[in-house]
Length: 603
Image (tube, rainbow, N blue to C red; front, side, top):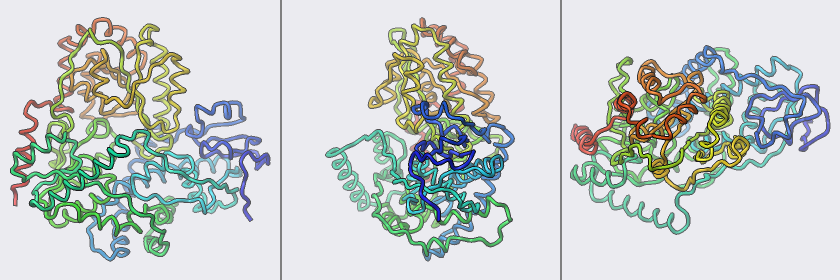
């Protein structure tokens, strides 16, 4: 019988122990510890692991060719399994939805699930090949959980315990059941930023329900806006100027009740026919029915019931960011798309689309859309007639913030990713290098500039222990107040720094705020169309390829930022970037109104 291993057990399991997660209380420290990846070694727990007899295995995706092969293989598996799973879900729920409907409903979760499983399987099999007799611990089956929905999956994947569950299931599927088991009560991480609490949240919920009830009864909007990213006043103006043809939706799906796992239903999702014989393919098919979120199986009918709160018979449905995690919206939009409604998707961020060589979510959004609105790029080389350039919805009405020597301070905005990979667009090895670049940048800064540096951390730390790292690097570092909107912090700084491909430097360049950008192109390869535009930023001294170069540029720019930023060549590079990726328009509202009316009036 397999025994349960107690925390800090002194028993030596073997000469090699594989640490798959950062749950150090379950490592066998009397053996040589093999770390599966950098995610195992928490910075805040360096005292636990730095003196161990240990070894860390290499990042499998650091080589471009390996990464490209894996990326293509995941895409192949996604397209292969999607119609098979769609057919099984139709049978389980007694419906006849199209593959395109299921692509919208489950596609985003399915792609990331395959990516996660592919990564964990690759690292485990690599470790087993190197150390076939090694020992490790697995999570007891009674502690396994099934996520409620696709958003929960992304939250769970940041936890050590859920990743231990994934590794445990893969090892079981590989026939390795000879490992000691541990019991861990798994807890879902909570959002560190709660925008509305208590009475305010209740009041907002009442207003939302009253508005939804009212809009359902005054008529049928031909084009529905849901989480559009337009400011609320812009949505109101679009509705009024279109004669109520354009109608915003404020519906927010309710938290589903706890549902019991239905093993019989899940068994029907298994389809092991026509398998190629590939080991990972078999594991994917075997594990999928265990891990698919409840909202697609046991909770599907509850989600379907919520779709009745949305408008009926829309001519078109527009959203910027509901296509991934809003389960009721996806079902509603998918069902009306099958009856002829047009799906209009819009870019909602800077870094995830239009510029990267690896952009799975960009591909997903375009695949489900009848029309896709970019912030400027149009995929000319790909001849994709779905993509249309429009002014960014969320930037409508934004004010400019030109260079101002009267301002003070340097605003530095960092990002965060899960310690455990969920997409080859964001690998753990690349993010480890990203953190090292931050230290290199601050070490290269002049001491007097370090004192006026204000770091704005990402609200999710994801276990990278950012505050500890920054304090160790710059003991007197100042952190920006996250309760203050980013644009307010941007407006009050003299110089803005960005070290990653994210939305904020788009916002800064759009606002004409003095900006310096640096990131590792080896870790963040660009597509061919983006290279020329980013080369212009590089030549203008806005974009830098090393943290040391960026630190030197900060020193040169800060004293007289007005002269530096208003240099004609620098401004031309900024304008060229905005023309391609943040299309500025003084008439954005009218452009969107004309576009929406044109679509809504079509029969």
